[in-house]
Image (cartoon, rainbow, N blue to C red; front, side):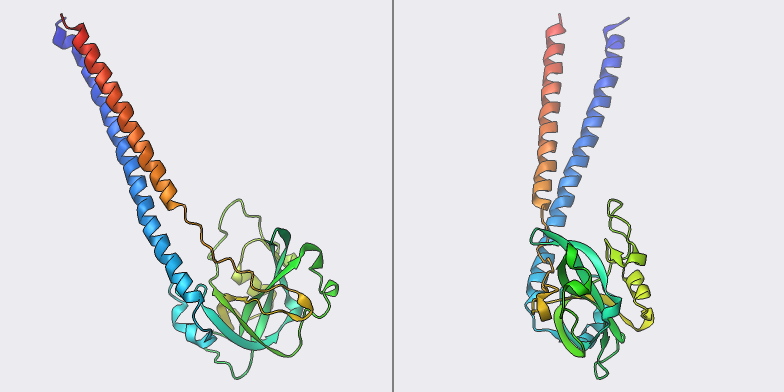
Length: 259
């Protein structure tokens, strides 16, 4: 067998390894670049929300044109007037300032002179109550009668369960672990076609009796895309270094084996 024939398998293995290394390197670079793109998107979104939450509140009718555009009304300050339908309170499991409890979601029947272009009712997250204060009897005065004005932030509904690790809602117990607008509308006895198709998180104005505690909206969006990008690019650099070392050692080995 000639030297050329003996070296053929080695050359094939080397080419295969180099092809795999090149593919892995390209994937790592692609993932890093994708995270950089996500970083720019997230920074733009954070800047947009920061500017939006400091705008003066608008009437609910002014958001009608934004409903069909994803993200267009999220965190927009809004003011509505109406009467709470306290008998249909619903409860979203949550924590606030390290304490577990519930966000109280209550239908608000809009006042007759409100513009009903988006619907005659809206579901409002009134705020937080401790775990053992879910029963209205334990929080006297927390359910104001008559017409009220609510100023808060518009929050878009979810199209489905956000993750398999989130527990299933228990609508028969009025208990929710993710914001299922359709189910909430149904158990509140509202007409979906006549209900504003998003939520309102009430602002920090104090409620009668001090509960629920309003202003619980978390606006701080996590932004770890730079760390992810550095990680992927770092792995790509490490792979390149390992591949270079491997190729150099093989070349030195090949030179040493020559007569």
